[in-house]
Image 1 (spheres, rainbow, N blue to C red):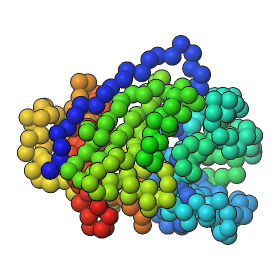
Image 2: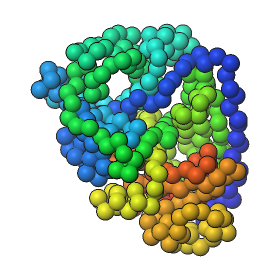
Image 3: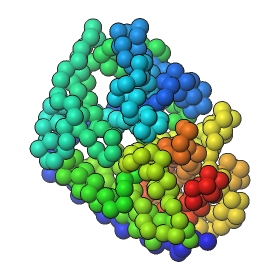
Length: 380
């Protein structure tokens, strides 16, 4: 049994007079993985991505192999080491398959770097240009929680398939009817106990973001475990970064399990938006993607709790899709099981119909589903 749900505290983000850190959006997310070739096969065959670019020995990259996969506005880079003993191998040995870079598209990578560092960010890669026959791109990076980096990418009029040094492998479909997934809705970070507010202040100070919503441990809890979460967003609302930390409870929370197996803070899950979640989840299940199990009784009060929706309740029940409503509309969401060997990184599939929230009405069902998986692993 879960404790009573408590309404989250919502903070309306102010509209800044001047954007101190202009960001166009998320350019790409780079995973460091144990086997980039096999990860690429999984992403293309299980999730419907298209490999669009590649870098490796054939493109004069002697120490790493990277495959770029795309779908809609989502771009993932899957990178593995070729010789070991380097940053990629060290990251994978410590964390398993995980997110190393959350790359942000900016109009000026040098200005973004200087602003970030002057406001307390730790600089990692100073601004520099890389180029090939397709043009040039300016890059720089700063550290965020754990071993995760924010890479600033200034593309200007670059015409290559991804970045200089990559060769083209294919073209992702441009027709929405041919896509299961359309874009990145949000990326969730898990941090250690007592560090959530520190990282919220970091994003406010460094990126000029604002706190959008706050979930207390009373709002996100079950009989056994709890966590706290705050969501920061940019002025446009296009970029949303929820940040979680564990809360004291009877047993080990999902955040504690993540931090134990990831060996520190990191990106917990990426929420990917779809226009037709019923079709999307049906196809993903058919391709072998595993999702958390939601008990049948969850759907008994959906019509009364949510009201009228476009989808059929029987479809949601059959597929295990959760549904929630706020003052601006409703959303549908579902969560995969961990996508790697460790119980760490997973994906969320989300379809919004006006709702701006994160499915707080589903926290009870979601967290009890996660606890059932933790219990199977002996980690609850």
